[in-house]
Length: 235
Image (cartoon, rainbow, N blue to C red; front, top):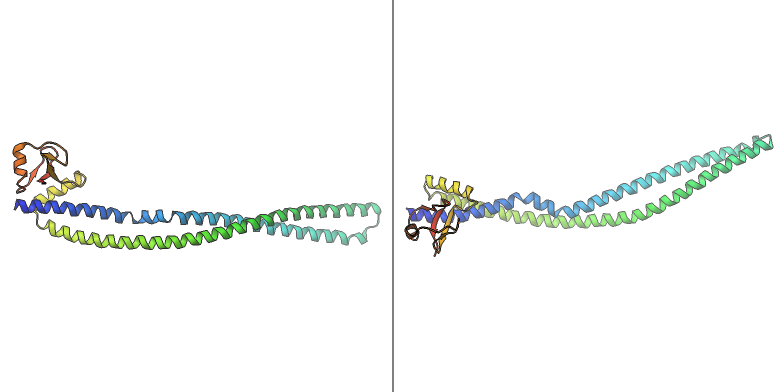
């Protein structure tokens, strides 16, 4: 019975190690997808920033055009008053006011030209960023599909090992199984350690000769005097 249980323990540990690895992979799915999405996130952020800059310029353009229109209206109103002027002094003052309004309008038109040039430059950059974002979105879609397909395989493999684990656990006594589980947890997944050249490969301590003779038989459960791991002989 001891020999069969020991063999089952060795096989169970191999299965549990694989289960732990697969479970770790499964848990990392969101992280892996996030890593794959970083380039897309960066391109989308760049696109959002350039869109904001472009929208701000378009707003500035509209504001300046509105003010220029207001100046046009103001100039026309001033011109319409020329026929009402009675004195040369008042006429000169009106002309001065009209010229001042024209100067303001001219300055606004220069500013508008600068805004239009900037908007044209940013529009080109916006088109480039949009194309980049589309490419990154397609790239991420392919990567995400591949990652999820891989994790379906991980899930299938995990389910297979879970089934195998149940089968192996059924061959081991309840008390021994509990002891194994405690060791697996406390010894970082190495509850059952091989003995090679007279040394426990779990803690690398020498095994006493008399105990070593018993371990070589692989016929009963023997624990390391130092680390408490369950030992078995490995040729």
